Image (cartoon, rainbow, N blue to C red; front, side, top):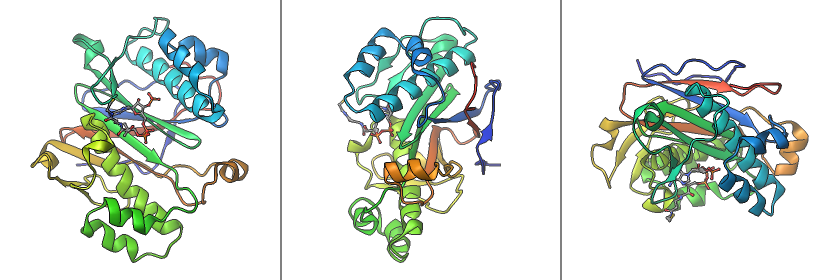
Amino acid sequence: MLNTPQQWTPENTLPALEPGWIHVWLVRNTPPVIDEEAALQRLASNERERAQRFTHDGARWQFITARACLRLLLNGYLDRRDGDPIPFAIGSHGKPYIPGAGAYGELRFNVAHSGPWAVIAVTAGREVGVDIEHPRRKANFAGLAKRFFQPSETEPLVALDDGPEQAAAFYRLWTRKEAFVKGLGSGVPSGLRGLEVDGAPGCADALMGYERDPGAETRWRVAALPELPEPPADIAEALGLTGAVGQGAVAAEGRDWRVACYQWPNGEFSP
Ligand SMILES: CC(C)(COP(=O)(O)OP(=O)(O)OC[C@H]1O[C@@H](n2cnc3c(N)ncnc32)[C@H](O)[C@@H]1OP(=O)(O)O)[C@@H](O)C(=O)NCCC(=O)NCCS
C-alpha cells in the first residue's frame, strides 16, 4: 500500500536504509542543529569556498547546515563515518549527485531549503527529488496559481479565502510539482505548467500527468511529506512567515517505494 507518513519522527540514531525505502530528514538551521566549526569540517574544500561567497548570513547558514548534515548522512549510510566527503558531480541543470557505480553511485539524494528548515532525501537505486516551502506574507497565491497551475488545480484554490488555508493549498501544489522536476533534475525552467498534481492534504500518489513525458505518472510517484513544524514565534516574525503551515513533497522513480520521515535532533547527533 502507498504510504506517506503523517509526522516527523525525532531520531538520534541512523536507521538502516533498506531497499525500497526513502529516508527524508528534516533539519533545522535557525538556530542550526550543528555548530559552525563542526559543520565546516564536514564540507569539501569547494563547498567551504562556496560558503564564504554568501553575503547573506541566513542563506550561508542554510547552505552550510544542510550540506554538513547531508555529508554526515551520506557517510553514515555508506558506513564511512570518518571518511572524507564523497566527490559530487553536478547535472546539466545543477542537480548534485554521486557519480560512479557500486554502493556509492547507487546512493541518491536531494535537498531543499525554506526559511528555518532544510530537508534531505536519501535513497538507493532510483532518482529522487524533494521540496519544502514555508508560506510567506503578501503573496498573491490566486494570481500565482492562475499563472503557473492547471485549471483543475486553480479552481479549488481560488475558491478559498485569501489566508493561511489558501497559502497551504498553493504550497501543496507547488512543492509536489517542484519535487517532481527536482527528481527529474530538470528544475523549474523545464515548465511546471504541463504538470498536473493532486493537491489533497496528505496525498501519497499526487502525480497525475506531465505533458512533456506522457505516462510519467506510471513510472514515478509523488507523495506529500508531513506538514512542517511551526517555528518559534520570534523566528516566524523575523522571517516573515504567516503562521500558515509549511508543506513538502518527495518524488521518486518507481511506484513501489516507501518513505520514512525523521527529524534531526537538536543535541549531539553524528550519524
Ligand atoms: C533546482 C531548483 C528547482 C531549486 O529551487 P529552489 O527553490 O531555489 O531551491 P530548493 O531549496 O528547492 O533546492 C535547492 C537544492 O536543490 C539541489 N538542486 C540544484 N539544482 C537542482 C536540479 N536541477 N534538480 C534537482 N535538484 C537541484 C541542490 O542540492 C540545492 O541545494 P544546495 O545548493 O544547498 O545543494 C531551481 O533552482 C531550478 O529550477 N534550477 C534549474 C536551473 C537550470 O535549469 N539551470 C540551467 C543551467 S545550470
